[in-house]
Amino acid sequence: MKENRLTVSVAPFWHSGAGIARNSYLGMAALLPAAAVGVMHYRVGALAVLGLCIASSMTAEALMQKIMGRPVTIGDGSAALTGMLLALLLPAGTPWWLVVVGSFCAIIVGKQIYGGIGSHPLNATLVGWVMIRISWGVHMDADAALANLPGFSGLSTLAALRGGYVDAVSLKDVMLGGVIGPIGSAGLLVLIGGLVLCALRLIKWEVSIGFLGGVLLGCVLFGSRILPPGSDASVNPLVMLFAGNVMLGAFFLAPDSTSSPSQPIAMWIYGFGAGLLAMAIRVYGHYYDAGVVFGILLVSLAGPLLDKIRPTARGRE
Image: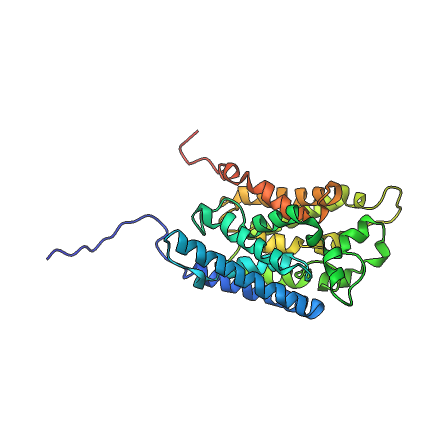
């Protein structure tokens, strides 16, 4: 019997061992410190939102896969990661029904109707968040949502800056999540987790660095305009860099493997454009708390076009 000694196939020829399950669970592990600080700060309200988001996302994925006759793949952790990211973008006082609606929108509308992981054109977490933010804005406002929880008062960082209360904003509190805002407000811990994923080469670091570069340029160009007209105060760029969900956007939302470009030049342009647009929406937009989310989603629409930017093949004009 003749034996085939040579097998020819397309690249890659050596598998790194990475897979959906490994990437998903490592991503959740990188987010655990920020999630733990959110639970410590907001107590049972944050824990309830986190648990319900993850459970609802996994339930929605299993139901849709059963309905569409596909294998149930909730064991790979992708749905759980989507739910965890959505929860970190939400205030701790978000009503339970809104958490469920947001999770189902993220999984069904943002992911499964396109064929599941690897096929959806936009980040599923952001799709779910935007749908409930636009539809039920009052419940999604961090200042209003936390009014239902005892022991919390004051303004979120961006609301305080827009009101001119610069002295009430502490950089230390902003970096460590000791402020009014979403559950995942501990930007420094999110940054550390993101850097770990970069070191493991699990995310596109070009997108992350480009995004942070766009935010910083936005701070320089028009960051002070977030203050009321006539104010003589100044805004610390680090406050804008760590406030809200910038770090989540830079390391866990913008580098989404499905909705972000795959070409090196395109990744830099995509990340930089999303960060700059996020700052512009923060300063000039009505949905100032959604600058990061809208910035990433809008630039994601140009992802396929950006991927056409690539070096010319050798031997071609």
